Image 1 (spheres, rainbow, N blue to C red):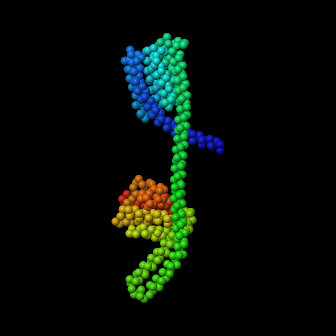
Image 2 (image 1 turned 120 degrees about the horizontal axis):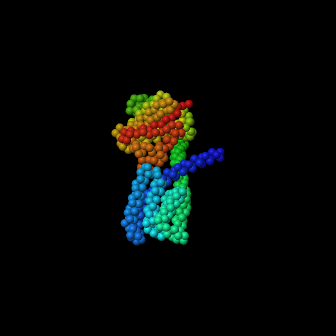
Length: 451
């Protein structure tokens, strides 16, 4: 177990370091390019020093500075290429050496160890450790080469090598710069990696928090929907007893009235009684449909039921929303499926209601909704299609997100499709949306076959 944990930790560290190296490449590129442009500016500004210290060498030093700046600019152009971006550290090392070689040459042609230009060598050494993302050994090698350039420059002036002279003092200062720069390099590298680790951990935590918030939103929506359905079921269970009795009295009275000779003799009266009877029967059906919500099992694999009856119930429940809309059905002979009957009614009510709402927003001249289904193996695929305005491509991938809605404030929470998606998912299926803008929208979901 311990070795497995070590292996897992090692894999995580490798992944972290891989990400760090990728980030560090961008960091090195940006800082190296910025440092190179700064170096060019400082090199060219150094012409003022040449004029003040060694006016007799002004022309030669200006040429040297122009050549050095051009070489550094050439390195910058190389770094911009794909080949160069993969070799940033090496190219940075090279362009940093150009000013050191130039300064060493200036020291050699002027006063050797007594030349004030040795200070320029220190500037580049500090820059490599404090500003640029160098590694420890790179920094030490760069500092060592800078010192060798200084020794070579002083060698042109043998009088420089005096035990207590400027050469010894300047050499000590150079090595102090090298050591300080190396220490900065080590701690800067550690700090950069710690910062990257913290940023990575923060990003992971933010992703986890976002996922948690999303899950909480879905759970909240599901609970809200379940509470609404439970309340509807409880209300319907009470209404069933209160409404059924007077409805039954009315139906019995209508049956008696329809047998009366006067009613039989009057076609108009008989038609009115038939319409009234159908209305009362519709009330019975609606109350019965609502009552199914009171007996939800909460599990997808609940009972076997006929989908056509679920469709009848859903269509009755959205009857007030679908007035004036042509509704057609194409269902197979066998519609026996398994699942949570009340939940599937809720899904159909939501899909039909959304379709009706979409049709009304554009005042379609011939609004129509087509409900069809077909068996594919052991799954029962249901399609609700309307000839409404369709869903724009930018919204099509978001319709199942919790709280996403295109309706005006107060006309919906944007939870209906999200909850419907979860319901179908609990049944082992998928709810998908297809659409052609300005032509049609289809919602397709599948249910398991009855056991």
